[in-house]
Length: 450
Image (cartoon, rainbow, N blue to C red; front, top):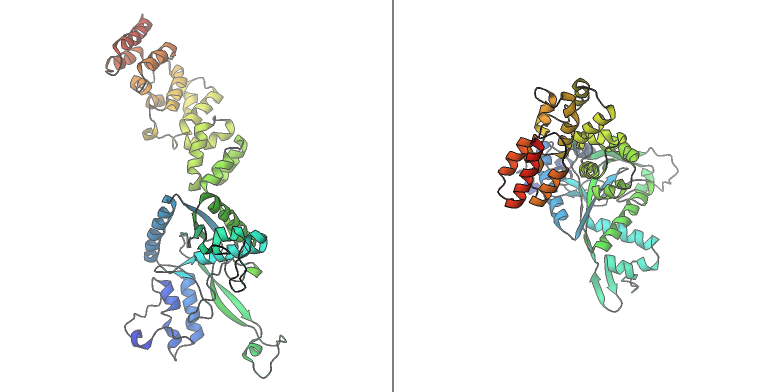
């Protein structure tokens, strides 16, 4: 058995039952295994139970900060591609690593969190490519002086027959665990030793199935946990590697026990992936997707882009109600065609949570359209009605237009609001307009007063 803590330093170490750093507790400070009075197996199971219980709030806060910084650095690198994968079956990484337990576990220093080493990602991918990709993806074998295929050499590196050894065009970075709210990425699992007498070589024992199985516990990463992968290199190659990794993760898996279904991961589509798909959806299909994903932050930019480029059809009222509520309100008012402000108010009341007073901006064209639609229902006087909060001024309508744009706009604008006197007052204060254009605009407005 490997001693977990050297005797000359064990006295100065605190004996915490559950330290914040689970990596130290699992692989270095499992001190009970060295004490004759304590049962070794029980102490090892206690360490596994500590992993399963998860991380303290303090440890998670430290890791979240580190993860956010690492993610930001990768995403700021124009040569780096990041994407997430989610475990669909238990995942065991580093089972062969040496420590005081019967199994190993890859834990990231100094936080003690799970991760998939970049070397393991590269190794699994190169092996899979060599098996499935034909001669161009064959791996290099230095012992037999067989050189790798051209594509394998370019992506993973190796030894070229003429040019000698060189690095591949891609860097496979460690895949970091994406922090989860429950702070518990591990679950307890077992492997059964069915023939202990045979393995111990006791008296010529034969593996005939007469021994009692001995369950050996270990910790595995639970399904549903996600990892952020990062590949650095030329764009075309890193996109190819990503697509290959998707296939490897779903068909082969990572880590130990992949032959019995462990280690399968599923690619998590990014906002860019969904954006390409959403652009071609019909309004009905987009409405269905919104109903399924409306609480997912990944889609926030997608929803905003879609309400900016699509018309507010009846099927998309829920989407617009959340992300462009004034236009959704206008569409429902047009469909209902209310006869008076009482009927219009019933529709407006459905939007109280989506359009509170502080979110109503008079400069918004949607808000202006709602006001203009409802103005006739209150006989041109919005005062003392809910419509008053939608009222806009001449400055909200005319600000930012050049002299030529302003003249053309006024010539074609026939709505009764804002009052002509308000528009005249606004133009008179504009110092950025050419004098002749300014006079033409004012003359056009004064003619309306006659």
